[in-house]
Amino acid sequence: MKKAPSHDYAKRTGRKQITAQMASESRLREQQWIKHGCNGFDMATPTSNPMSFWTEQDILQYIKKYEIPIASVYGDMVYANDPEQMRIEDFGFTDDSTLELKFTGCERTGCIF
Image (cartoon, rainbow, N blue to C red; front, top):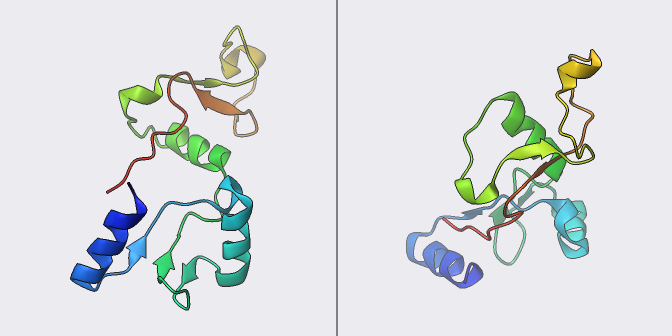
């Protein structure tokens, strides 16, 4: 559902793929990143993966820090290890960048362009 339309689009337009795949999502993606880096222009299907070195927590921290709106299917963003959902300010901290975040709804949607 994702690969075929992307390949068809690339063939029709001559444009190359840009994806948000992360190396941490699978062993194969990690191996591809080690071999080709963020821009696999020498691959059979040239692809740019500018987010390949990001982790899920990097993305969640970025969303939180810059207050980026998210689709409602993801639910709310909460601290993963805090069942009471205490606010970071309650502990006297001002930097919560080391606390693990998660969504209360869908973790992944498999979205495509």
